[in-house]
Image 1 (cartoon, rainbow over the protein chains, first blue to last red):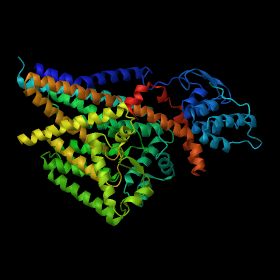
Image 2 (cartoon, rainbow over the protein chains, first blue to last red; image 1 turned 90 degrees about the horizontal axis):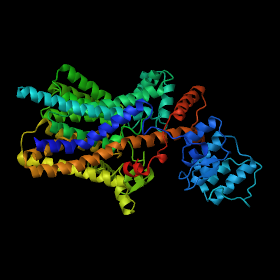
Image 3 (cartoon, rainbow over the protein chains, first blue to last red; image 1 turned 120 degrees about the vertical axis):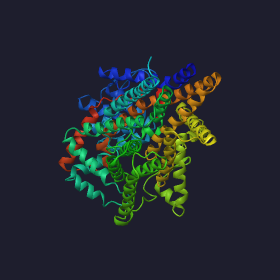
Image 4 (tube, chains in turn brown, cyan; image 1 turned 180 degrees about the vertical axis):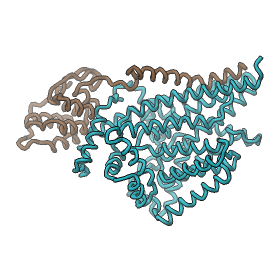
Length: 153
Length: 479
């Protein structure tokens, strides 16, 4: 009897523990607090830094301006917090696909805005982002990067 | 004083109830995850647009009969049927709801097939459940839907057929087996595994489907081959249809043609071998020896160790159980017979993967691997119980380690589904850009309205960003 008990407990205990934890998870889901399916709120720049194109589109649709600088919390992109636009966050994260989504979903950049982004991309040597920005180049824009520095450390 | 028979019956009921409870909880949690996933874009949206354009289910079915290389008319007809059922509004309810229903059914059919008569059996079944849900092939049932996960449908039908062989039989069971075979075979090629399961089970004495039923099924199988290769002449897929893993590299269709165009059998043999190894050792994955490659590059994540070592240990237990049975030559118990069916299904499913090796295609074999695991674990626990205290303690320690590893794997299902939900949602965000660049963006108002509705639903979905999850999850659970 004891031998059987030892064998049953050893074989079934991990699965039983998984069952209990999963049941707890489901119970919390009933009250809208599922531990795994719970999104932490992010702003537009943070979403861009975290390669979350869908949230980027969603926030732009809700009227958020990707040209406005917002706080990107420490450890999301850099060790320290930073103030970045969504475009700058995409460049800093090296995400061409995020850059394209922002450009597609928002108003076209003015020549000066485009120049700033294109220069930042050049500084980061992000060829794929360069390509995306070239597709959205305003007609009157001329690339001039003197004096352009990264807005992050 | 309770009679021994009554006490045994109570113990059996309690043991079965405990496993069913565990299975129910795991199934509910996975179904919840599925419900949270947006309808996917890749390999799915085109099918939905086709379903929208099709005038009827019958039209979808008959149109699919004219395709080459594959015979899957019911796959297309089902997509259309669910599309119509959605009524222009409830696409997530129709497709994800159906997906969730299928996974619950599969888990229930799995547990139902296991002969659980004692607490020892229940312990083996609990561990087998974690093997079933923790094996990488199980993720193939969850990660994607096109927009229906047809691999999951086939697994449900095959497990349904296995349950029929365990039934008391009758003409209704035979008829049901025929219907299930027809549905499965006209959905995906691996549907013919139903015949393999029923024929093997019948030979082994599991005759819920009668000899008459097996003859009926064999006639249907012959009919399938005649329809496919003679009447419709659909042929087989060519070498140049997809990229494929080959040892440590991924080959493009052009490279496959160059290397194996004049010796296809080498490529086919590799695919069969890779599929077999994948189920037994969780390596290779999709034909690619990913863990070996990572090891050569000095970049092995804990996930690779966990999957390969836990599979190696489980397969070793199966090997031990097979050898133990061969030594004694004792009559096969029901779980022993199920293990033999599992071995045959594994071999047959691997053979069906000859033209293309992918975890999803071998997923039915993954379900049967877990059934074989149950039989082997049950056998080992019984031997341990019959031995001395020392043997029991050693086996219990080994079982605890094995069960912990598989439980860890099983718990990763939710993380992987979150990863895929996140990707699916991002795919919707990028869709207009990608399709416009590729010249695929539709112009008609109905298609655009459908895309807009699905895209809005996906973007509004609350999907956590896995990059904000603790780093250990990615390292231990992979993707």
